[in-house]
Image (cartoon, rainbow, N blue to C red; front, side):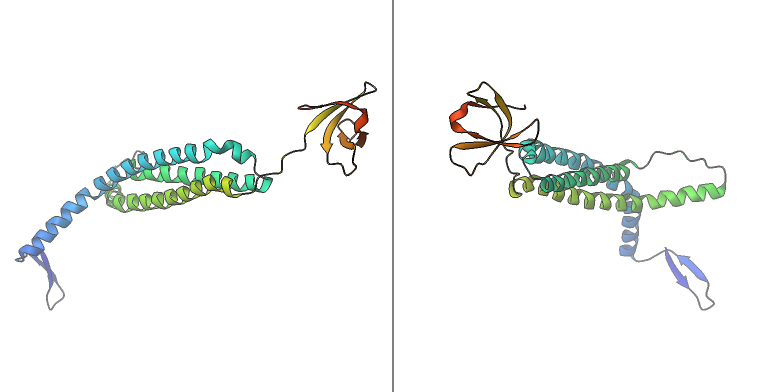
Length: 219
């Protein structure tokens, strides 16, 4: 149909004699009818794929680096933990939005009047646009999540490791006494320094009084 406006301002409809216009109108009607189905089918496949990809990257990129992450400084651990939290939030948002685009949001609706019917039809016609917006948001969030998980996987190799802790030792002496604490660097030749666990005091011990130095987990 073609709409024409006469001199009086009245609008009249008449069949179109342009076959190309008729073909375009039919294609438009078909596309509108299939738009929501195509969007939801694409969103369903995409959501499953992104969930699997994020899980795989999380296991390979972060899960296998727990020892390296544990060896980072406090600020390094905080940075990696922040990125992991961002991955969880963005990935969860992407999956939820993808599911909403694919399946909608389950709810019931009662139609008891013409106005209710018109409102339902308006919502139905808005579904393709709503699904497209949700899918677009899911794609953006998934891209950000992939960037975050990549950064979280690379940072443990780039950030400095924490200084190794001083060893805890038990020093047996020639008088049959023992001292237990943290072994410290000593600037005096022939002596070792130990920070005692029981008092926190630093004890300097001549080597000629030492029988044995044994590493221990704790005093």
